[in-house]
Amino acid sequence: MRDRFRKFSNATADKMGSPGAFLLGVLIVLVWALTGPLFHFSDTWQLVINTGTTIITFLMVFLIQATQNRDARAMHLKLDELIRAVTEARTGMVALEESPDEVIDELRQEFSQMREDEAGK
Image (cartoon, rainbow, N blue to C red):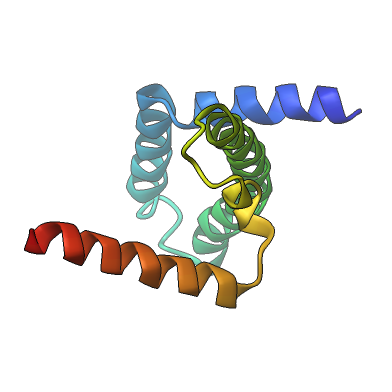
């Protein structure tokens, strides 16, 4: 099931991020707006677009989050492999995303200080 969901979410995210999907969204909104006078701008007319966009947005949040989580995990693994391959790199940086915020803040300050020191040379 996970594999089918991964394939579905990746395909859906790719399709929904396309120019065609954007144009389809614009077309739907234009058709909805143009039918306003036909339905006398009724509450039902407004409810149709509100309900439709809410449902689509709700579902897309989960699909986009799933694809971003997978991409982030893959990126972290690639970076971990590079850290392991470079002999001068600190292997303590592997899986840094799982470290407490304090450790990450300390390293950020350390790298910030390194940049300032190098800029001052």
